[in-house]
Amino acid sequence: MSGKLFVVGTPIGNLGDITYRAVETLKNADFICAEDTRVTVKLLNHFDIKKPLVSYHEHSARQVSESIVSRILSGENCAVVSDAGMPCISDPGEDLVRRCIDAEIPVEVVPGPTAMASAVAISGLSTSRFAFEGFLSVTKKQRYAHLEAAAKDTHTLIFYEAPHKLISTLTDMLEYFGDRKISLCRELTKIYEEVIRTTISGAIEYYSDKNPKGEYVLVVEGYNEEKALEELTLDDAVKEAQRLIAEGMRAVDACKEAARLTGFKKSDIYSVLQSQDT
Image (cartoon, rainbow, N blue to C red):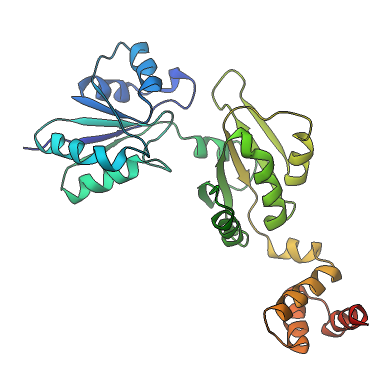
């Protein structure tokens, strides 16, 4: 008879946030898969838990997962944790869960704190519908494609970001999203917890002379078509027409499409275009 895989949520900062069930599950597991064993051993020592640890991170996941699945199939119970919060979300544990499901191994969740839900709850932005976007790619092409795809999403958007990339991410967001409301949450549940509620441009200004520290959850206002149209200028409409022309559209058709998208008159857009060509 096979064992089970337990997906165990751990504190995102304050160790007092761990659940009684999570402690009991970790104590009863035969072994524990950890993203960084050095981080997890501190948690285990705090609660006097002595269990074998298996290193399971993005660089080792494929090689190690087969061995983990084999051990569970032989009857051992495994608990998987991340460095902080719920594992298997923007986390290599996702693959382990999938492999266990494919092998018909029971997977049980032991819920705990999550940075994204905690951040959106105190953001002051709409919580009725939100989309978790995770980390942006470090590859520019993928990064820009991600931002472009999210730009027209009306849901509140949630991103994770490291401090050394914060300014460049905010700058890219301003370009693709415009100047929206944003809540920047750092060090949640820790001593230096901080939540800054401002606009994207305001955040850039704030950090222009202040060094970002700690891991960030960025909660960004979703797309609002009416508000976006109100903020558009004739220059924006002309730029849209120019973009369409560059893609091969006739000037007249490009002006018509730009007028439809922005609300400005086709004749006004065309007049500016003509004046720029002379």
